[in-house]
View (cartoon, rainbow, N blue to C red):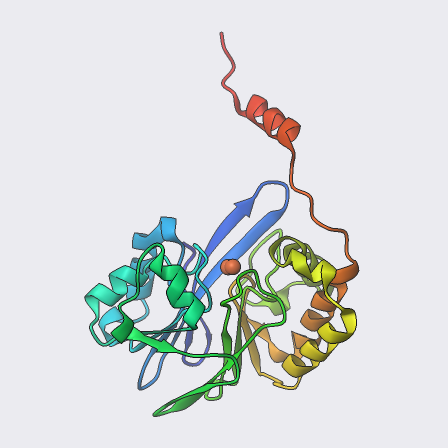
Length: 266
Ligand SMILES: [Fe+2]
Ligand SMILES: [Fe+2]
């Protein structure tokens, strides 16, 4: 885990980083929204569950959380769900019907601890309204991001992620060229179906996101970004249908890597 930090008043970031050989670094963020009913956005990487809970404890007592917004059920988003539900009887998981089904294959969510939400629906809390949003790119059909009206922040799940050389705390510290190239590469890997998308239909989807005009964009796989960068990000997604498709290393490349890592015998 990297050190947690504050992205904006009331929003803490719990980041970790994955290093992808030959491709760059991918940040993996969860977020804590402080308020009358604190919200955790996603629950960390499965393999780092204990470190994630320690990082969470450094910014909030997990017993104070009231909601866990599960953007989707991939292994980099669900790590601490079972631990947090067991420790905190007041915690409820916001997800879609499909999310409940997928979790049922691995770590079933108690149904009385679930609050189902679909894109376009809202959750009204005492001090904020969360509006569920389907991001224009995703790698899991249950994906539901949201807009928080209190902080005017768009939580976009995997969408707008980028493979980067270094991970700053503010996406504005990266050049536009780095952001664009890193986002296009990530999307060709994570949302490869975009190569088959109709650009006109995709453009309408992107316009819907543009109209949100958030002050801050919090992606699971990008440092938090000021809203003025949203146009750039939407341009990156729009570029994916005609970008070069990603092809992973083949078996010969794997054997080369393994040979390079093999201990030298005497
Ligand atoms: Fe994902
Ligand atoms: Fe992810």
